[in-house]
Length: 87
Image (cartoon, rainbow, N blue to C red):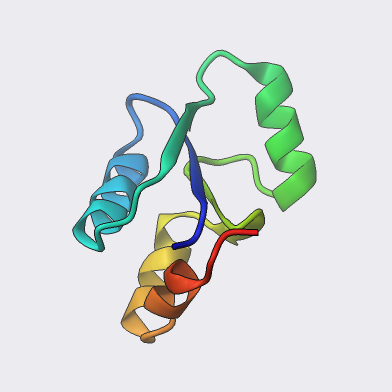
């Protein structure tokens, strides 16, 4: 199973939806709260080019936010990414 990290904030609706999608898939994930952590948010921006949450990483690779993983799921590609063994 892949290693999944999701950077969130407590009041983010898209974060809740992303976590719900991953939970529905039976995926264990590490949630990292980015609220009130400007250094972490800057690191995410530099790493992903985005300043919004959620930011989701599968096996260390950024796959974007909720809209992105939802699109991957609808295209039938998310399950394969989640099934890859962690590195």
